[in-house]
Image (cartoon, rainbow, N blue to C red):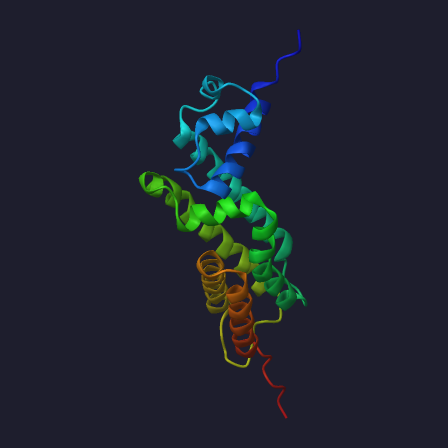
Length: 202
């Protein structure tokens, strides 16, 4: 008789399968039977791990938040290459979306969460945004973006970066990759102009 799979491993496999289904099909179009079939178990077995589809969906949110914050920390470290880091992070919005069910799910959860779970999804998202803002602020403070010719503070530049992230995610979600690329080029040109170095005194 084959050994039974550990409970934690089965739950993790269910989350992986649910993540892919929710990313591709959305919450409403995904059934628990599909998720069970993807994992190779019977549908009733899911309920030993997750009370219902809502609970399974909500279990993914903290995992996505942790992964997104880890990614931001790995890219945004400050120093002399801060502009390259920020541009890479913005470009990664599309690159990672194209390559990852995780990021596709993340974008759906941000902008089109299941209506009946809206408050439960958005509450931790607000905490995520606070954490992301702190990461960006720390990186900018440890860089040469401040001082700049426009006299913009690290706090203002950080809020600007958060606005760029938001507008680019919306553009990708609703307008597609071509318009995303065009918007990234435009907003980045403005950001570079705004953060030009202060001229040296004569």
